[in-house]
Length: 468
Ligand SMILES: Cc1cc2nc3c(=O)[nH]c(=O)nc-3n(C[C@H](O)[C@H](O)[C@H](O)COP(=O)(O)OP(=O)(O)OC[C@H]3O[C@@H](n4cnc5c(N)ncnc54)[C@H](O)[C@@H]3O)c2cc1C
Image (cartoon, rainbow, N blue to C red):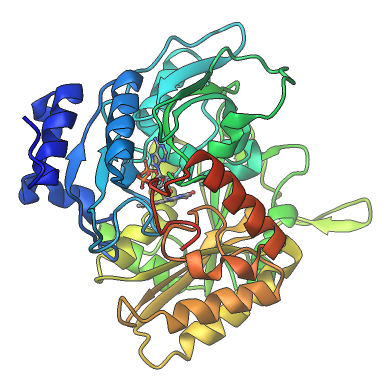
């Protein structure tokens, strides 16, 4: 019997009929982890959490929600940092959180084409290990690898630490299966590299942040492993010097796999968090991490100075550098950079900004951001670090109130003056929906809204995200 007086109870019964009662959560204690994000800055309210276990069940859930006008927030690992993975506070009707974590199947690796089809809820780490076990390499990697899902990384077009070598998530996608709000399934997983048959509908889901539908499976392109690598940490004084090291310290004949920069404050916090010592002989305003595919014997790093084509290459004799060759030493060096988010979050609720600028502007923009953030009256600790080779700067700030948006705006406006993007890799979410106009034209925004309106005419998919 339909309980019209209690629409949530009625929805619960309807969804339980689709996914099984044990996969519909309404107990606030069980729902807590689904309504608060990793950073704890974003918290909202939901009617219930539903955990479908197949594409058909996702379609059934979306049909049921659409019929009742109930909004849906798709959620993978809930590691997104822009408030897009959790509902907003309040709302009538309250949204449903649709967790994709049960869609975690890993298909057989197709050795001939170097591809694999995986469920949207498989973690990035599981996909990496699955590919490696079959002799292949998945090109995306980031510190949240053991929680972030493939669906989430596609929905945010995640970047991470290997973009310089393999590109963003968008470049790894051969096909996508997704469900629209009316329950129709768009499935394009055959794995053809060449397929010019009209619009590439799947690619619209990449970077859609749950606003168009639910990604249920992804066909991924894999790479041949790069082999053994060497990792170096090198002290630097300025961002300009840090950028220069990417060419001056690396043999131009080897492949650069990663180039990252961390600042002194962040290094210090990471050392404290992990209970380890400062890794270099001296303190420096910045520490650059370079990883090169050189067979693992450090031959990819230029020692001493040497003239090639009239240019001087190589690390100065007085460069402060440590090189990791074996896996455990490399993991120790990487830890300083990879635990930045965690180290700042350990202080309390922090503001986490992720922006990008054209590489030639990175040094000037990063220095200006340091000046803005450093002079902010309520600032206690901050870091300006990031994925150096990608022009991608992260700003972590502890001190300003969680809901003080002025400092965020000052940063985004500074980036816009350099012709940059208000979101490099984390997405727009709720955090930057109001600032999209700083880097997207009115015409571009109108085209995006038209697509959203066509696919989600009731506006039920992750309302408030991307468009505000
Ligand atoms: C310690 C740490 C380090 C990080 N490092 C990086 C980094 O280097 N590079 C980077 O790009 N990001 C990084 N992130 C951010 C985050 O890990 C990525 O944005 C990741 O892609 C989110 O995946 P998720 O499964 O957790 O998605 P969620 O957080 O659950 O969701 C993110 C967005 O995607 C949508 N979504 C999720 N799954 C689906 C689906 N199946 N269908 C449709 N929409 C969906 C959600 O609605 C939401 O809008 C980091 C986060 C942490 C905590």
